[in-house]
Image (cartoon, rainbow over all chains, first blue to last red; front, side, top):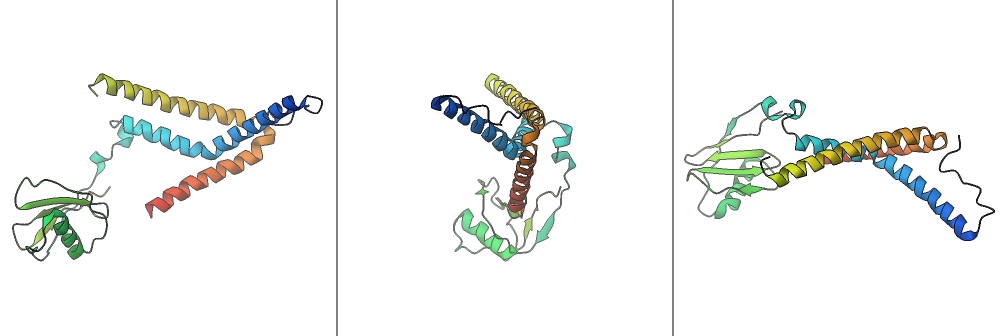
Length: 141
Length: 61
């Protein structure tokens, strides 16, 4: 069987027709080759899109399979020179030896509680009402 | 999903994903029966898989 991308008998056709045949052949090749190269990328987007669209599918359910771990680390009290949540979060991360972006600091609902998150450490929860601090590390899956 | 537009979007997204899976699988069959394109096709398929997993590895480390 002749391949769909093999040249046809274009030698006895007019130039415009030959050009069209050549373009069509390269278009087919480009379609095949680009499609094959990108196949797994396309599948990745299709499957992840389905999983995001159906969070109740059991095989995609990770929250019920999580393992919670908690740890406490002592830090020195934060001084008054640290103005604002960002500066305090940076100081806490420095003391804990954590480096990375601080994603958000939430509005404090309790005066002695400070929540923030860093991709390097997951969600962190600090109670600041005493000398030490308590951190809650992210669940390990 | 209690808003009509969200339900419509969900249906549309599902349809698109299933359609993409179908046309890619049927495309693989149509490519595979073209013997002349098989070798270069496998090379590109392998290169694509390598790129994807290489990218995933690089992003996760």
